[in-house]
Length: 278
Image (cartoon, rainbow, N blue to C red; front, side, top):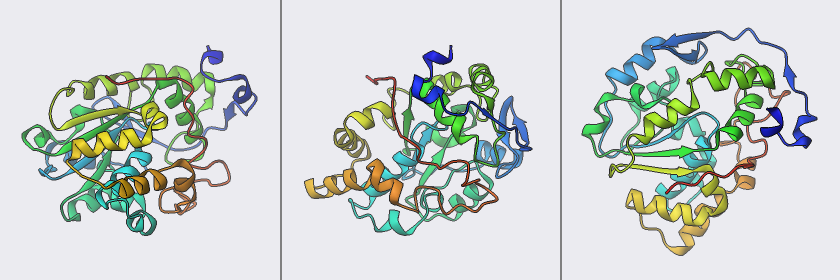
């Protein structure tokens, strides 16, 4: 089965990581890390947090292009000017809503707000459907998500390191990983398909045609950019530019959060498998 997930070149990489002491808790049947998250915060997000009409929320399952889309959206909102993305860390300019710190940032964030989230739809703020807020959902092929999630788990200290790839594969397929099942997550959000304030795109589409994808996103957001501004968005949202941007590549995270010796956030950004939206 692993041959279907990893090419032969990557199968030669270490396939086992020593287990860490990270701990998880369960919120309504789904696992979350104890570090940076709490039952109370996720419950507040679901039941009390108020989505505003001019909010833009970037939603993904983990390791599906969250930071990439956050960069694209920030650049679109600033008409291609990279000053914001070069001077503000990604978790401040687009906080992860369900994290303890992210929720506090979001609550103080002057509108219009740009936010990220990994939660399945059933945990998303309940008032969303009564607003004009816009959600952009990025979906990535689950085989690529699996591989990226596996290596990510080896150096993020809030996550249990994954053991062998076979062990992690079994947990991934059963949904016994943080944020639960990829399949259930996608299904929960695809239920919004067709609603005017919901837009979805695949990671693979972003890779194949970034400029065309940015044009579609701008149309959804009602943003008009000149050709020069569009060029700047595409340039600064490229993998190489983001890899060099300390505000986006997570290299400024402290050692108590990330083991920088074991891995880096922006590893390869490859797609071995293709997924197309309609």
